Image 1 (cartoon, one colour):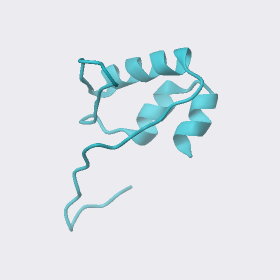
Image 2 (cartoon, helix red, strand yellow):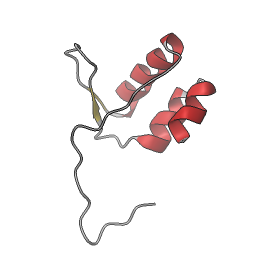
Image 3 (tube, one colour):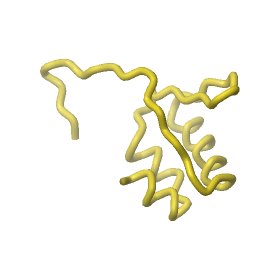
Image 4 (cartoon, helix red, strand yellow):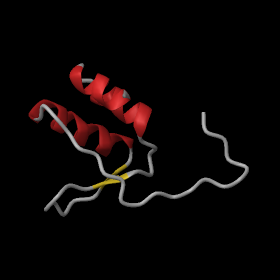
Length: 72
């Protein structure tokens, strides 16, 4: 898994680049701020990687791609 391998390497920028799009929205349990955009996501993931040894990621809302979309 990309997240697990990069988490062990403390590679927050790599996690954000490989897993999230700029429109991704992240919030935490019992946390009001909503983080979106590459810079905000990178800052958030950097703090999580620095302060945590494990993580759980739960997808609450997913937007399907259209029939003509390509995933690269």
